[in-house]
Image (cartoon, rainbow, N blue to C red; front, side):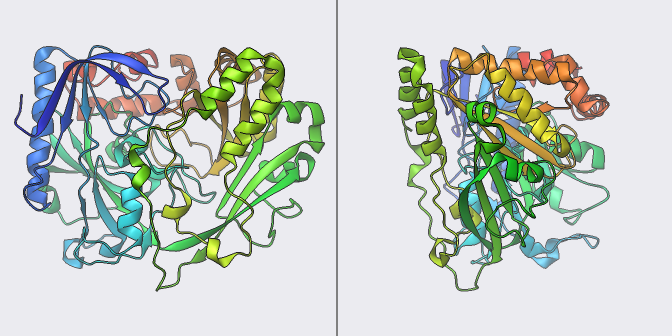
Length: 523
């Protein structure tokens, strides 16, 4: 094996964070930085070489290989049965830059940028950007991510690899704030930027031991790679000025909020301040209420408004729960439904209580939070299912109607429907591809009824001619024909980019798995 900075476990059972995916694998290899020395770009070069050696060893052994971060995905996209798993969650170095590092034509400034190694948790990125720290030489950044997922337990490479969609109605998915990416294959170490938007000086790639690649198409393929273009080693994020968010939770009748669901125009919608454009808007429904009560159904709407953060604000973080064992409460609710399906409504109410942790915080200044505080760590929840359907904005209420009708056939499913909104994202395979996209999640208790409902909704959307995508990192029923229908010629664009980045067919096969093969992305 490469050296003492790679821990190896043979014949292991790999399990994801939510414990719904368990797969036997031949090897799990945890790669470490050399922490005996201060973090440096030279250290990054050494770690990249280590990762490349693991890739070459897998190829020599005839094994497929996948890189995995925090095990956060509900889908089996990060793993390959009987293959090798590279654990990257120990690789969490971060770097800032000076004005002298910037390309003459860069459209961003050095203080906006943060280079994050692949295993860096979103929680750590928030902490580094938003507060004083010893990681970066210029100390307090007073910056923030433009958007992030609902939780901060993912690694940056994992979040990008599956296209995590974020939570801001006027911002694209997380990949939309990436301006550079380092990609490793068996024999290539590449620093990739857009040709149309260079960022770092030409000699920066060499400092990482990488070759400089400036190509818009390859960049847009790499930022949502599905783990199938190589190992993402580092990501260059472009941050924004630090800001605060104030949350309000309000129950609004479906008939009153319906027009806003299809337009994001909030006049007359009943949200707390209709004169202001929210930073974030989310609507949660019980599908049983939606069907039974129609326009009278209660919708739990969370709205977040954005304000500039005062210069002296000092956010506090509690990152102690990063390795929490989680809670069995959702599993317990699922067991209640199995014992007595008549208790489904009670169980769903309990589920709503779990999801709706935030109380109405409007007009309470002490409740304003930075993004890193607002989008905090979520425990692993055993017995939970989650899927996400991306639909075009004008189709939202049509999609909800189809989902509610599908629910009538699976009324034992303890689930809620959640609408969140995001702008079109730049990745070739970003599932937030509509302009803008509403992501409608089916979240709830993992049961046969829930799984059948998710599958039926995909079938009903297809039959109705509803344009839709599905979240790569959640439970999905994607097929080759559905991926082609959703992405059209982008499938060919991505496969063409993949052949350039991985010209050897054996290596393309090595960075695939059964799912990638089945949906036509190993061409």
